Length: 324
Image (cartoon, rainbow, N blue to C red; front, side, top):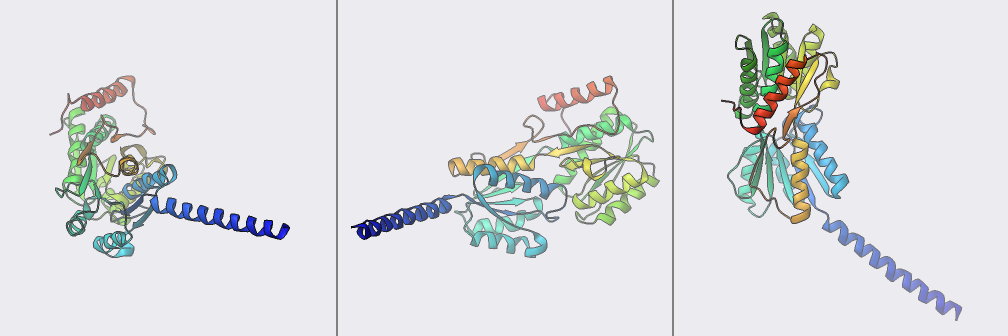
């Protein structure tokens, strides 16, 4: 009798464990899968890719998704990386940065049922949703700060690769500087490289020789080199995309925050909750908290200067002030 009872109990345990195992496997299968193709600078750029990855990690921790990613340095081409992600059966594939657009569109055309999200560029393809940012609004405030506090009346801008996105940073910076001080001189150079720290440093040194005492790089890891060169020379600089104060705490006045992390997280959250992304084209600016200023450090603003920055921010957010 006792033996029969033990056998029955063992069989019951087997059934329960099998059911639990099947249930766990089903739950694992139901978890949303996200694939990400990072921008050309990849992880460690202390800027665009890194902040996008923060949004991805937050989604993993809070939304119980799984993810995989590819970097250009490892995959060789965007197309190869995207094809590898496609083969894994992702629910959503995210392309980070305008550089991935061409290959992303090639893959999207061949896979019309696959959902894609393109960050920082716009595609007309129906299965690609887009998120872009009003970089010119945040950069306008950076330019205003530079022109407000420059002692030499010369400030600099360094772009990574010349294209409409980076030109938006430049346009906003120039407009903000000229709005505050029409006489300020603005030096502008495009490095044509987002991953060359030494080139960023060299361009910065050239600008310093021409009198620049504030540098604003929108150039990925090239920009990190510019910031470090500014610190070495004892002048001021601004960060971009994420709060880069930690890179040069004697030098970084503020950073133009581009909330790529928020855009990534919100898109994944929609996929988790509804299985789709509601908006085809999302454009995020100051009003949407898509761009903003990091805390102002290193320098001190007078009460009047602080109010001027706050007024400019409000007018840009309300649409009272537009950037040409």
